[in-house]
Image (cartoon, rainbow over all chains, first blue to last red; front, side, top):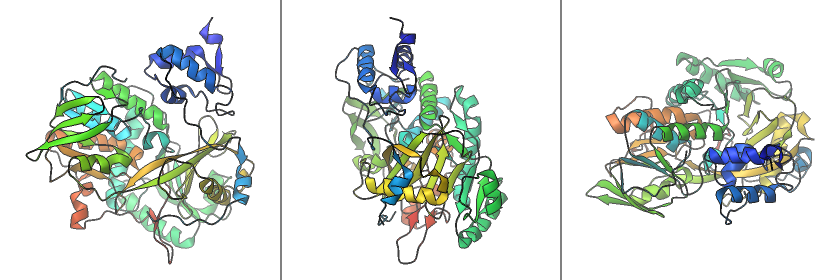
Length: 95
Length: 397
């Protein structure tokens, strides 16, 4: 299997070979390899790819106890206009 | 880039915190000739505020101390790729600090005069010129401080460049290594205890960001810092629309567009309790503030939001230098969200202080002793005062 043609993250075009290069450059856990390659940060925010991503990193690292990158809200993209319509006044804490 | 070997029994210096400050300082200590340096981080490289900010680089402040220091740092950003021999993804695209009120414009006028007198090439521009530069900004804008030398940096890339350059010079960077104790013997630092064992050292530098006060307490030092949550959000990608870094001083919201086309927004709007949770209240209140500045962005979908922690001193200025109580213990914290902008100058000047005792006038104002002595170095541009409310700190990160 040629890693250059195996896509792990379809949104950001990250291949198995990209992950291997990042791993070799010292990014050896999901959180740092995500930032180095951009995997799981595109339009789907990892919903399609995170399982394949974590399994690929686990295979490179030779370990099975790796945690997936943190899940961030919202679940699906929400337009700013929709969020703004739901805004309510907030007390900002003193800094 | 990272060291996977066990900690060695002894180092010449141990830096706590592998963010931009810790990595820059390690690089400069090694460059100045120090050997056997370890940088320790409780989590992954860049897991703290460095990896969670918007990467604004600016020198447009309102007090001489801040302008001098951050202008020196901005100049270093411009040459950093050459210095480190690596891409740092710094985009000197210019920085716009917007005024939505006439009294803010008056404050800006005074600040620009001060900035210009100190060699900063900022200028005050009116609302029409702001709109000519950035047509997406609201016609309600009254004016701005425009600084062509400011910009944004891809924070992770810059951190990795510092870390790799430090590593090439022999620095050990140990991630997932939590400091649990610091031994002080007869008024001197002598050892650091970690989740991966103990190591002896005569120099400890606290570059632990939001955990800086907890680290200092291990050495018996109380720091008057408070920790605050600052949230960010990023939208789907759009064609190039906003070309400069834009910060609205009066409504405390910032925006920059990434190379991938996403809009990254930051705001100080946040709800207690302090922590890394993302909140709906932030997203909703920020969206309203963003649309005040960029009324055409209502259809931009928010992809994700996240939170970083900021350690803030009473005057919002950093803590840089030695402490009186414990020899060999140095502070590089309290950055209040300006740590990335300040990393090149902070690292370079603190390294020279630690190794040569060189007291640069650029960092001397940020000595921790100022707080007890009442020599505060607050900055008029950072603090927004509204009648009947506690002052807020402007979003500039």
